[in-house]
Length: 386
Image 1: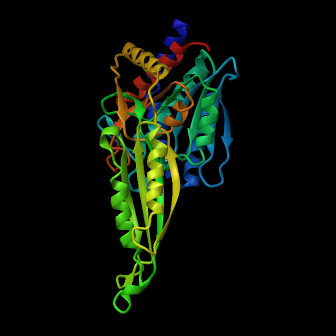
Image 2 (image 1 turned 135 degrees about the horizontal axis):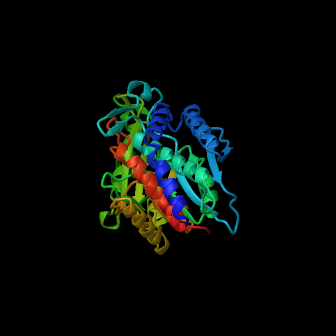
Image 3 (image 1 turned 90 degrees about the vertical axis):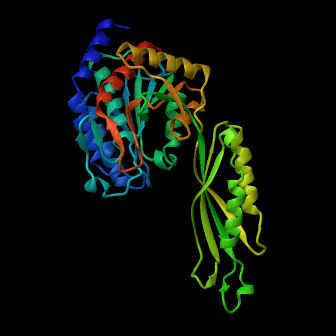
């Protein structure tokens, strides 16, 4: 590693604070809810303009339904020159028009706005780190991957993430750093499930006995599904959405529920999903029937010897610029699990620090933009040539 290269990269990143904030404002003030393909692609266009202007080669992966994938490449990755992969997602959980109601703003040392921490600041950080190495030289190939639908379990992006992770030697996912300043080395896996129940309609006053209530069946299934929760093992099963019925004076002909399953150990996945399937297939109220559909799922981020070594390297690099970085486990899911499941050393939440994601109070600590970018850059330099 060249000491001169290190100094050039660190100094340049330190000079880019306002430019980072300006880019962040541009991204935050662009609506990009997961189902808003036009908005997500507009964020991608902003990033592509910056990245190509910095000298990176960009490629688009077209999706008909969701936002397109975007890959920025520095160097020429191959079997001998495996790249370091920097990941981030462009979508948010907020509806179209949200940015008009509460655009990007700064109060004291905090920035606010839809997706400011989760995770548009991480996109900015990754982009400026890539730009720094494009300007001064890189120790090896680096790939920036900007996906489009993480907030809904990456239905179109998972295959792209796995494709890029398979050829990488290390992965840094720029989800927001924790308010503590820590990064994430472990995450739960998640499965999102829809259950549809059919009953038999009848007038609830005239011929009640001829009806079969889908809502009654739903209530019994919810009780059985919630009983699968095992807090000691880190397994939670939550029915978070319910709907059903036709009118107050009709025995309910239909009902629907959406289920959130979280787990830690990969081996628990098939067992709990199988138990949910068994509950869905069981008719507690004779005459009802039900179907189950898996809407999406995340894989857990499981710590390994290789990922622990990557964390130690990152923490050591952060310490060199005055940051004390610990590690945390979280019940939240992220794309990092897809990379880690392939056996690639993966570190998550390397982005600038913030909190209260998915809420109107979401915030970013602006003073972490540059140091977190520098810590990432030092880590890339410390990994050296492949």
